Image (tube, rainbow, N blue to C red; front, side):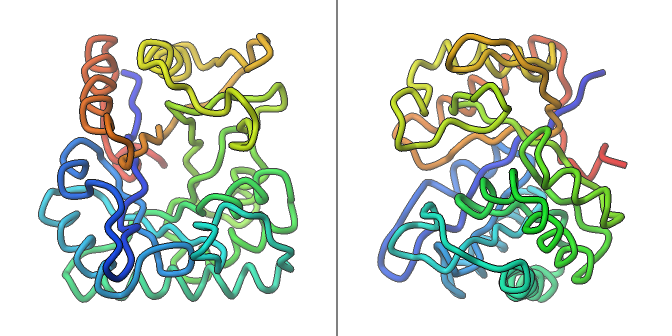
Length: 256
């Protein structure tokens, strides 16, 4: 049976600013990527989101990003591999402490936003992130864009990886995501998005924004939980996958 993990970026509220519908999204996904305070989140939000994830039986991952609250971690920054290593250790360690204090265990690490996309193409940056994950806990799974340097770096570091695909993002011929600044970066039509999901998960291929069909590996599928239709869309994706005979499980249950 084909199996896939459904993940969502959560815990992105900050202080009095509420973002997303975390409590409602958690039961619909199998893995939660919880912000660690650099691009979003704060200690209280981290603690609360960890507790909600454990209560819902959702596997927990750290979602480290660049130190850019104003830009939500989506703006590129010049960071050295050494800086990236320290930032990832710092953030993963903080979230791991909240998880441990609540009686759980961290499953994975998924870099956020610009850090994720930069590491998809920069091997030195990817190696630094993978080394940081390995050094914090070599049992952790590193999530990276399918076919990216981040997935390759996990192999070099001797840790497990999960190749990630996106339900609502368009792709470029090199396998990268279309930058959000470009037209067509987001797939707005739900039917088109679900068709893309089934193609990636079942057929292991995706049609790019310019029309080419390229191969992808889909271990984990990102469904964003902060849109107005996020709940209904997440449920529709689950239903479509189930009808296609796809098993939905947290990555830690099938990634070896």
